[in-house]
Amino acid sequence: MNLQDFIRDIPDFPKPGILFKDITPLLSNHKALIHCADQLADFCPTDIKIDKVIGIESRGFIIGGMIAERLGAGFIPVRKKGKLPYTVNSQTYGLEYGEDTLEIHVDAITPGEHILIHDDVLATGGTAEAVCKLVEESGGVVVQCNFIMQLDFLKGQEKLKAPVASLLNY
Ligand code: AMP
Image (spheres, rainbow, N blue to C red):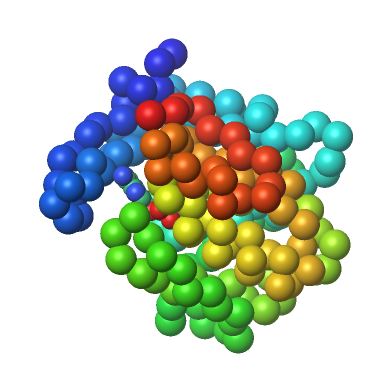
């Protein structure tokens, strides 16, 4: 199965000059969805037990949850500012388009836990880098950052210390 067939390019969304990679065709196809989650779970290191998977709001929640189920791990939502109900740690970071703040509950990670970070797209890497910092602040260890796809020309991987895995490269 070629997952690339299920990624739709939307030019100039959400701003002129951005080629938005729309994963909704992948999400709406049962076989593609299962294949994507299976592959990403298979890419995880087998010598380290992942304790928790972080999904980054909002598209990272869907397949992040499916990976957590496959790995027998818990799931942690990292959300945009003001969405989480309990006490949070925050990080502000630059995006391919604009600036944003991400938050995690202060008790989401127990120090020493092994964490997998998942999102749909790695672009400039600012988002994933901010989430790595949130994990480190909580005393967690980032084992891998994994993505459905990586926009290689934006060199996001260079910002990340942890190993990176993606199913598609553009
Ligand atoms: P970045 O911090 O630049 O790596 O951006 C990653 C975040 O922005 C991810 O949560 C993506 O969902 C989203 N994103 C950035 N660029 C794109 C793009 N070209 N298409 C779809 N989503 C994108």
